[in-house]
Image (cartoon, rainbow, N blue to C red):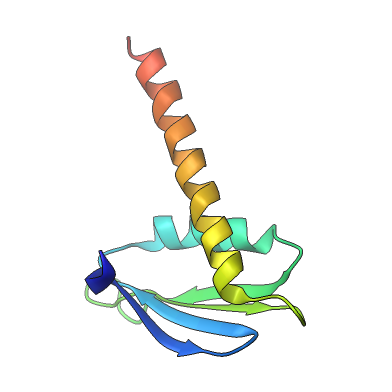
Length: 94
């Protein structure tokens, strides 16, 4: 999995990374969750080319807060939401 995640820049209040083999769907969901965190000043991503580009995301946090912690928390929340959605679908299709 680590070959799909590459940190480009890691500063005290800003983290930029690339998530290979992902699309707008995952990146936008992650960005949305990050922006709900009051410790996050902004979270943005860009994909240079829709077919060959790799998503590059930047998270900037407020003073005294670490972007790595915000990312971990957002990833956990995205995982939980995905599991809940899968459960709802599974139950609906039984």
